[in-house]
Length: 113
Length: 116
Image 1 (cartoon, each protein chain N blue to C red):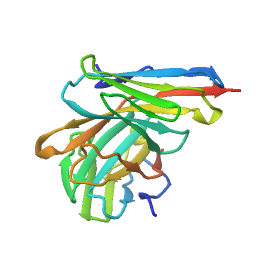
Image 2 (tube, chains in turn red, yellow):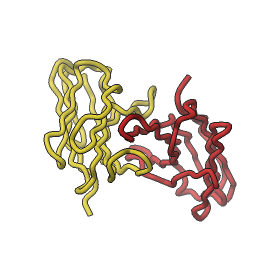
Image 3 (tube, chains in turn red, green):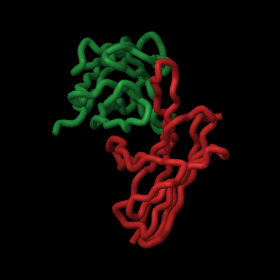
């Protein structure tokens, strides 16, 4: 079983739609959580951090459920420019308080006019 | 501000040749990471350094791969000898702080490596 699992999609949605991505992680000791965005043939870029209390950044809302080891990303009023691959990222802390990022395979979103 | 700088952007070489990828992290960032991305396996962490010291190299595929960080502003990832299955995009990333705890990472543009 992969440490971080995502539905690869693709999700094809019309402009203005609301779309949700899910991610599960297997290591209950995981400490920090992020969503990254990667455009085609580009590098991953941080989209937002994910907190247990949930957090919102404009049209984007991220949620973390530690009990279920589940992370979600909701995009409201989707735009053509939201088309990209969304990567779920989990940090596991090891010894000496150093951690490493574990990336999911990514979920591809295609927003159509 | 300059981001993470990687070179070369593209590399095409024949199998058996030595390949050296280079990375300059963002100034002041203490942690540096090397990743490999393929369609089949996604983004995989190969190795990461903190204050120039390798912390976790468990992702390095085999002895053909080696990485060094001789100083805070430069790192190399070397493959010798290279094989076709090494073809991938190799990303370097850096982050501030002592540990990769809550700090997001900043990625370079990547090196697209093709081994023929």
